[in-house]
Amino acid sequence: MADGLSAEWAGEAAGLCHLLPEAPGATGTVALSFLLAPRKEVAIHWRYEDGKAVAGGPGPAPDADLVLTVGAADAAD
Image (tube, rainbow, N blue to C red):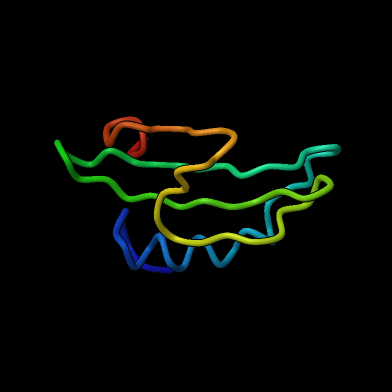
């Protein structure tokens, strides 16, 4: 796994979405962004269908049903 929050990390992390726990009844897209500096972010997204994470990718998902944003200081903890 790549070190730190980088585009390389996002690509690798998104490929692991099948390891996410099931969310019974969930269907929709989740976007997770890390704000590293002003105007710099690293993002990943994944999709749940019938409670299972089935697909993911690096980058934001503009049509996400749930958007989570984490500041750099919080991501480091």
